[in-house]
Length: 444
Image (cartoon, rainbow, N blue to C red; front, side):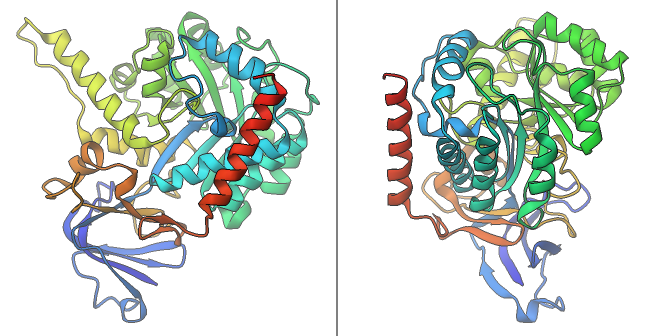
């Protein structure tokens, strides 16, 4: 057992609430209790005591969409102009050069980076599954890091590949779903339309049947504009939407499409920096559209080749953009702008992210009975002191350097500010060698 005691506790569970000073008791992989003083709890007598004075204990952050295999090429196109340029450079030119080993290296790097920044759950939208070995390597990387990983498998956009997807999902499900003591789960990954990569990865009756037969969720990327709006209405008519389906980006959708999303309980993953920085469709994260129909979205990182790797950036970006738009829309009028709060974006990055990944009953909040996925954040560092508002500090003040401790299913993955069991020099050598081999293969 572990007793985290004396710190501020942000549970993100509205029935439990937050504590200015409180305790969290963990037994094995579960949260046992949350309270103001658990020292007299029956399990506390034998628990390892973790003093969290001047710290914040909070749920682990949840990433609902990241193309993890690209990590060794992170920030290689920092000023990419649009989606077409990313597709041409990364998916068209670079992706075909990846070996299974490169898939492993990139995915492991992304997962370790996530853990270092307090992300305990990551959905890996693995759309470079050129062979079964490529998929196996990506899943093995999730297992080896100990992150709560969701492997969303999809065949590649371009180049030669074995055409084993989506049939190979059955093998992956048998081999890995629930692996690592339940840490790794499987989803089907797809695209919204055939505009980018042709009809094979476009979501519809065939892919929905594959997911239904395996009883797994579906994550659909590149949900943009008029074509995707029309597709959403078709899916609704065909009964292909629901809580098990996630629509990623959801920018530039019609009002009818948003009503269909809400009516079917379909989930949404926003990628705030991706939409705004790369300029996807309207370039405006669709948080207002989602909230207007009662959809509370999850948040995601997307592509590290052009974007930041951490959830703090996503929360701040969305918080700033939405509030800017709200005030701007009301400027010069008597209207009172409807602005989201820091608690809203933290909710998106934790509880709603877990629900979006199909793990809403497993993680996302410090709720007794749920998995012990939690972070301890230093609130006395130069960039976080003094602690006045715990939620405000998490969203607007903290960053990866303040993440002192990370637990996933009760196992310590980061302690005293360092990843546990990771040889950074060896990791750096493997990542660099993989990057160099990929670039050499494509003549860069």
